[in-house]
Length: 339
Ligand code: DAH
Image (cartoon, rainbow, N blue to C red):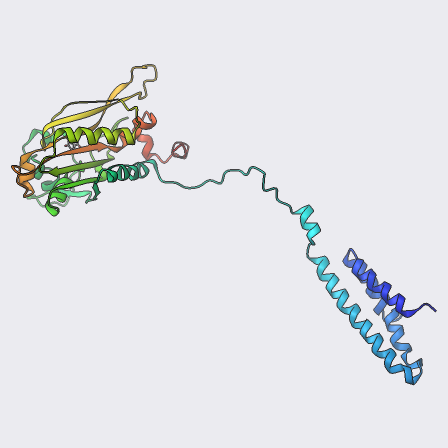
């Protein structure tokens, strides 16, 4: 008869070395099978053992029995979950592989540009303010020195609101200029502010959209001059569009400034054949009209200053050579993803 110890030990090794659950089943059957299992038979033969040795032999067998049960359960569990070795070979990740770029959302190019505007003017000491898109005739026109019968009213084709107080009609603001009035009525000079936002006009073609963005600027103090205005505008245009931006100042008329100026920037536009480029008006500006200061309770003998209004989409068109302004609002991802 073989030494029972060495055969129990070899069983133990086989369990530890088993590679599959089937192998474990076979070993379990060999040990605990009802009729011929080695452990079953050994336990049955205990009664043949001499009484004085029986207790010791039974204790020993029970220890082996529990060992096998625990080992079988533990090995089954191990085989069911992948080992480090399995993971290393079948589930490895090469962290040096180039992954496809995950698509991320980002700001639309208009709000992104407006943030830059706030930053550039912020560095020059300008506050930023916003105001209502539904304005009154008083703020949008009258207080800006554009009374009801003034021909300049026709320069901006206005969306009027239907339900209206005839004495002070409501409209969709045609410009951010009413923010000059609102800000001067609530702040004392000296002051510096920009006011970005949406404006509305009945207009639509490659360089006009019925809704577009402007930002107004205003600087009032005791000795603010036209030279200060030029310096601020040139600094802003170079920072926002390009250090090499080409622009020209020429005189222009706006009822709320005197003198008034317009700034044009060179634009390649949709006319690729023409290397010359065209000039596109992007800014109106000038020294704030004394009537406007007076309308806001500011003494024009003591204070003066300048105002300007930039067309946001037009500046972006020049910055990125975008031929048609309507692309901003069509929601075409192929266009938007480029910025
Ligand atoms: N509000 C004018 C427009 O929309 C632009 C403008 C011109 C604004 C001259 C100004 C300015 O502040 O001084 O056409």
